[in-house]
Length: 204
Image (cartoon, rainbow, N blue to C red; front, side, top):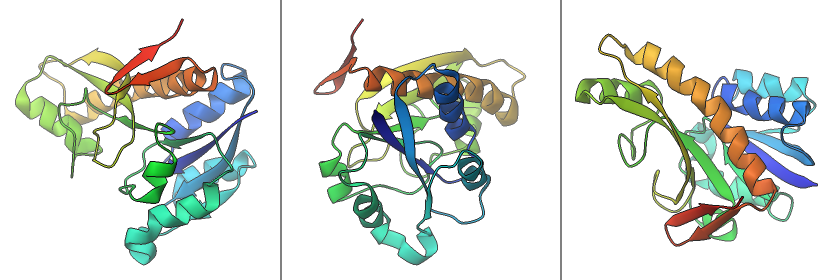
C-alpha cells in the first residue's frame, strides 16, 4: 500500500480531488494516512473527518517556525509521499532533507512565472491578468528548500481571455489542478516519476 499525507490550509478542493481519485479507483492501492493543517476550523479538516482520515493541526500562529519539525515527528517513517494541497506555510529543515523528492506541491501558475514568496491564491491570478499573459495554468513540482523552486513534474495550461477576471481565471485553473494533482500522485505511486537534477522524466 502506497501511503500519503496531505497538507492543507483552506477549503480543500485539491485535497478532495485526491480523495475522489482514490475512492473511484483511479489511484489504486493508496491510502491517506493523515491530513495536516496549519489552521484550525478549515473545511479541509471536515473533508478528512468525513472520510475517516486522521487529522492534525499545527497552528502557524502557535508553532510558527516549528511547523516542519512537528510534521516530521508525525510522518517520519509512516508515509511514502507528502502532498501539499493548498498548503500555505513554508516547509524547511530536516523535513525537506529527509523527504527529498517525496514532497509535492501544486501552484496555480506555470512556474517560473508568478511564483515565489508572497505569491499564492488569488494574488497569482491577479498578477497574471495584470501582466497580460495569453496562457496560464498550474504546476505540480517537488518541494525543496526554496519557495516554488523544486523540479517540475507536470504542468497543465489554460487560455487567458481578454475579459477574464482573477476569479474566472482561478476557476478555470482550479479545474486543471483537480486533474493534475491526482495524476501526479498516481504516477509517483506507480514508480513512474524519475528525477535527473532539475529535469523530471515520466515513464510510460
